[in-house]
Length: 526
Image (tube, rainbow, N blue to C red; front, side, top):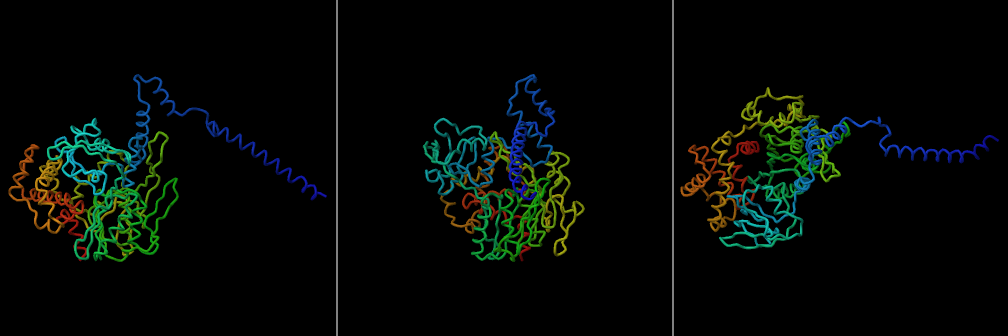
């Protein structure tokens, strides 16, 4: 009898419980939205300070700038790499990672307050409109002045615009005013700009940063060099400040076999994530050298650290920057963005190579300068190796806590620190000289069909030196008498001219031939 009663009343009982649960859930939702649920009922001290400043401060303040200052100050107390990106800067920051921007497709330099076109991107909007190297840009859309004291950032803002939009440029060509109408488009900015064969079996690839298309670009360059007979690779990560982590791990996967761990990330609110090899790489067994220096950072350190931990590559150069923090970008309601550190990354052996930042942001930013003053950039001192020591599979000791220490140390070239050379380079004088030299002798230089012919034929003769000296004097500079400095000037002139003729690859073919770190890499390949 009791079993029958239970079967009759049970459905009704469950229905009553369900209704009560729905009512409680609705009330809980209302109180949560009102802000009083699990709240102490009082306003925070921070909000009280903000309200008092807004209502009582002696001068009127701009709310947006005030909020931005507060955000930036708050982030400064966290770590050096958590940053607030104002709304007006978000697009440009994102474009750097995406590897493209909306514009007309020219490279320019400012000489004597005038924008001079030094390169026109093939098949780009400006090239299709007939713009040429040597054009001087004067106006945009008849009203926007492009001459005078303009910084490169403001010039970019005046020339860039949405893809498909039209801009009319007034320019000066061979002493004649002309108008060119350009329909803006999407301009690709390669992150793997340089790749060439050094010898019959040694190839060289330089990665500038890790953007959305870096792995794709890298594979195109790698496969292209393999078709030319490459068996050994020099991978240059010097000056690479990082970027998208997964692009770096995808490249590491081409060098490491099986399911080896490349890197893992972990934070207080971010569970551990392992990044492992997923595919068969096309360069897993071939000899590999990686070039690094003090400006190699973040994703570049992930790649070089993983290769070092697995004894897969010889790392040559100087200790890397030491950025082992992972940022995630969050979109904000005002159109800005917060790039917040959410985790640390660790190499396969467990190294976190983030250098200390507990002395404040200013001390953190001065750390590279201190390396030079301490002599670290000029002489390897094993006593300076800090952090926990780890053993690689073949017993090699590596360290955490402050960058990736190379297997082979190469000191900084002190020739570049000469004050006379710094003054010349800082005034852009050499760039202007090369540009004028090219325009005056354009037919001669355009006859060079390959780098080999140019490298053998072009040298600064006596007449060139006289003109260079005059160019220096026009900028209140003097031609140095030191043979070492003159050699560096001649090398830079030749490299810049090679860039004018053959792009970035031409520049690095000339520079690398006299670079000690590069020479060490070639020796390692023998």
